[in-house]
Length: 234
Length: 213
Image 1: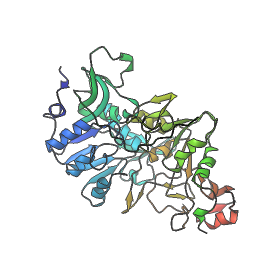
Image 2: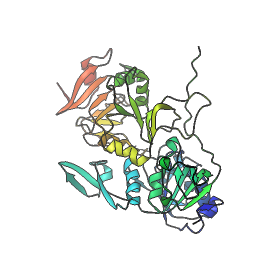
Image 3: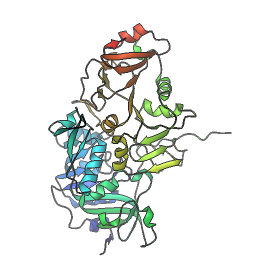
Image 4: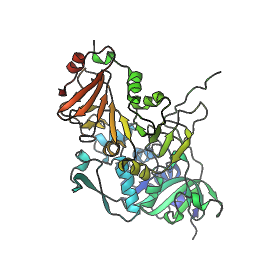
C-alpha cells in the first residue's frame, strides 16, 4: 500500500467533509502540522470541530482556520495568547469545549485504544464535571470522560519511513501520538521520509499501523516565546 | 503602604518556595513566579517535569541556540540535560494523574481556606483555560501555591470561599505569598511564618480567610 503523497493537498484528497471532527497534534506552535493546516485552509471545508490543545496563534497554525471561520467548535485546554480565539469564544461565534490538558490527551489515547470512556479525578468539583457521571472508587470521586473518535487526525513528526513508522523530536512529540491514534484516518507530515529499514525498530515512537498517509515538506517551525540566557564570560 | 510592597519580592518568594523541595523529587513548576523557583534549588537533586512531555528540563538556551522543537509548558525555549527524557502528552499526564510527581508549584487568582483553587478564568473577562492545572492539582503529591497576597485593588486573594470558577476542590496544601507562608488545615489557614519585615498582625489584616492558631 502506497502511503507517501507528493504534497499536503494530495494527502488530504477525498478526506475532508464539512462538519467533520479533526484531531490535531501539537502544543502551542511546537510540533503542529502546519502544511496540512494550510491545505485545509485552501480546501475551504467548513463547520469543523477541532480537538487540539491550543488553537495556534493569531494568523499561524490553527489560528489560520479561525481567521477564515472554518472552525465552529474547538476542544482545547488553553486559549491564552490568541486574541482571535478568545474574541470568537467570548462573542459566541465559536463553541469551545474546555478540556483539562491531561483529560484531552487521555480522551484521544482512549479513543485510539478502543476505550469509549474512563473515570478520572481531574476536574471533580469544578465546571468541567457539570453533567458528567460521578462514580466513587475506594472512597474517592471520579468523573466519566469519553474517548474521542475523530474522523481525521493530522499530525507532525520528525521522520517517517514509507510504511508510516514515525519518530518525533524532543518536545514536538506532545499531542501527536495520541491525536494520531484516535482518527479513523491519520495523515502525518514529516521533515524527512527515510528508506525502509533505516529507522531502528526499537526506537519507533508511533508504529505505522496508525498512519495512513504521509507527506514530506518544509516547516517554518515558528517559536512562540524566544527565551535565552547570556553566555557567562570568563 | 499597599501590602504588595511589603515583605518578599518575586525572587524571594521563589527562593522560599524552593525550600519546599527535597532531594530526589520530581516536580512541576507553573508559569510566572513558580518558574523562578528553578533558580534556587541549589545542590538538591530535583528533576523538573514539563507537562508538554519532558522530564529533566534545563535552563534557557544561549542566544542563537534556540530549538523550536524544545519548549516548556509556557512555550518558552529551553534546553535538555543529561538526564532528560521525552514522551507524549498522554504519558505525561499519566505520570501526573498517577501520583508520580511529588509536588507542583503554581500561581493562583484565588485560594480558599478549604484549599479550593481558582486560576483559569474570570467569567466574561479573561479566559485563559486550565491547561494542565486541573490535572496537576488533582494528581500530584503536594500542591504549593505561590502568589501575591492581595490583588491590584489591595483585596485579599486568600478567601473564605472562591468567587471564580475552580481549578480544583480542596487541593492546596501550602500558600507562599509576599507576606508569608500559610498551610491549609482543618478549619482554615495556619500561619507557618511571616515574610521579613511583616508582622503576624499585618498578615492577618491582609487576609480574608479564617486564620486558625
